[in-house]
Length: 289
Image 1 (tube, one colour):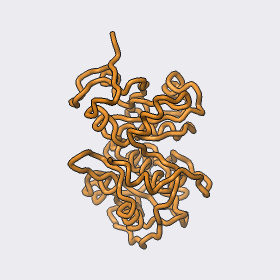
Image 2 (image 1 turned 120 degrees about the horizontal axis):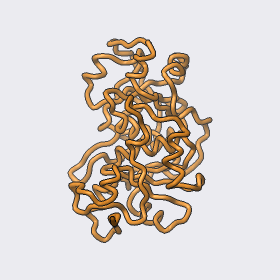
Image 3 (image 1 turned 90 degrees about the horizontal axis):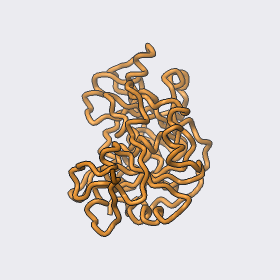
Image 4 (image 1 turned 180 degrees about the vertical axis):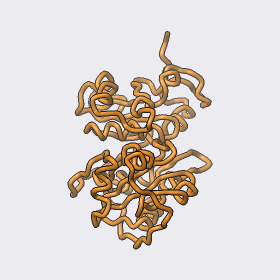
């Protein structure tokens, strides 16, 4: 299935590098913009948005290049060798610190790029610009149309902390007291409202942390104390591993990133309801009124 090829290559291991901040502010990025190992990546489904304006030095990343679609499923984990080429073309090296910037409110696809890069071996080396390009401009910082000259990087996909998991992992997790499965969709869908998939409801035993609650009207992640109020009732033990899912593994990445901000051990179920709902032997339930 979706995750099998990439999961085969990426076994859990420690990261040899000190972890960078998960969230950074425009002021932080402005101060560190010219650090020798820093690579700014602007994520958008439309290259026109990048061509129109971007942070000086930023490179363009089309989300589908690291989360390809197939006739079987959407937003798949990428083939490691193909992903390696994408990251090299962005100028990323083994020691790079990548800062992801979103535009046009596209927090979820940018968050998925964060989780995917961590899966590929950059765990602890990726930051997310809180508020994206809008926050950068609001801070009075410059944008440009100039396309930077990029030297091809030498990054190699390497064993790292697994962040994207498959259905077998979720099934195992459901039986564990030290793991929590979290549905990142809106509460009405978690409860059993029409989803457009074969079965409505949620994975049996899953809790609910809607991804919309993680960000404010400016598409910025809320302060840690606000985020914690959503996590604590669902994951009272901060040592528990959290596996988030949604429709296709995109909006669950917002919950993934919020959890990373607070120091939780996070994963994303890649197949999510697009896979789970069609496999009728897998357990589902709906909240009863």
